[in-house]
Length: 123
Image 1 (cartoon, one colour):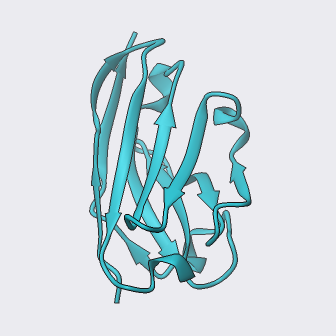
Image 2 (cartoon, helix red, strand yellow; image 1 turned 30 degrees about the vertical axis):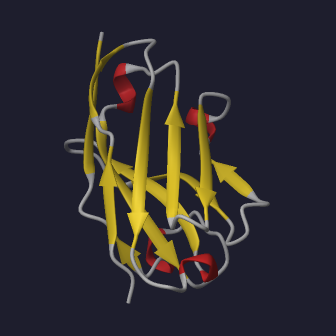
Image 3 (cartoon, one colour; image 1 turned 90 degrees about the horizontal axis):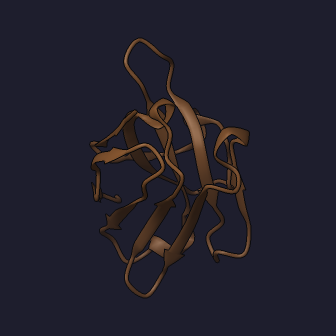
């Protein structure tokens, strides 16, 4: 069982930066691929970024490439999402996810989800 708790969301102006953090419980954190999804009002949930269990591989949705960076610290059981050059269209609830399968862009392949943290980007 893994519990995920996100933090770091908030209100920021367009062009600004935020860093989301996800703290995971459990001693097997390093076994899990980790990722971030987001869901904006009246929109479907979408993949944002993912990182492999050892941190060597990452993948991003096209709209955030070059602006967002995902990283993890297996010693601290944390995964972060550094977001820069934020745009109003990045406004959403961001969810941290963990999965025992390989790093994936598909939501159903993740076993655990956090409660989410709100990110609002004003224009």
